[in-house]
Image (cartoon, rainbow, N blue to C red; front, side, top):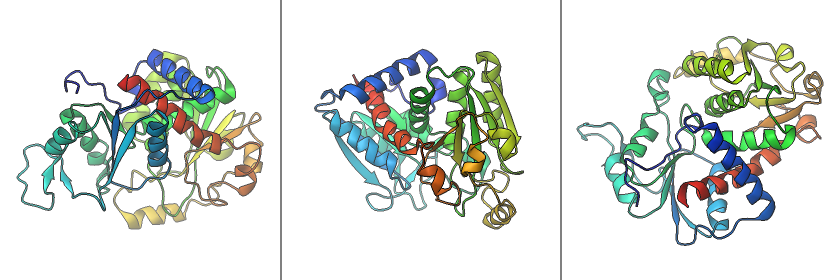
Length: 337
């Protein structure tokens, strides 16, 4: 196994050089069109889920299988107990084991650990630190891959950029509109945060539409602005639907929680109830420049996006989901070869 100090992890995609991401995406395309050789024979990936998953789990399992490897799948709700992540804690509460010990032991069983932590859900200031996934990376002696933390979803961003390039070719100067959509159970901001930084690093012009009170993380927006200045793209946030979508090449729908009301279910529900009309339909899409639709899924039909758009020629959602498999095969190949 690798030494902890030299092991490469993927906590957020923005930590990887653009050139390395370019290489990874090129490999993704080759694997998509030519198939995957058995490069992972004898290798095992440990998948730890502290909350639910459909596309991430199934695509990761399929990726390892198609590469000739194996997976061990563990779900916190059914397969093991709650783990402590705070360093130096006196473990007299519910957790029976520390991440430090679990990471050390699992590192002797598997070649890579892919983890989806569960944010506490009460304080955004605490959850945005992503301490759980970073603790795993600190103590594991094998590569750790983030399968969506509170702040980042690098695997989704890889598939998103792959889909954007498949559709648009070169991304510099292309217009991407990220549109907040209403949902009774809003999702996390992590995919949008990761996509935002990735798109700007490739020189895209990004506009973000959302109601008042649904701003993205301030630290992420600050980093995004700096990236836009450095890479020749542009960033506008807090726009209305029509303003954001006008002239867009791609419209990316996503529900996300209000970070202002994070941890307060009553206030959050009240704010959402005042935000009607945030549905992506054909009339809105027609404002773009032959605009295509992307969405990380799951998607609430006819609430977030209309059936007409989802099932029509503008939709890239199934291709986008399929690219999770190919980009993750490329990632595993690069990290474990």
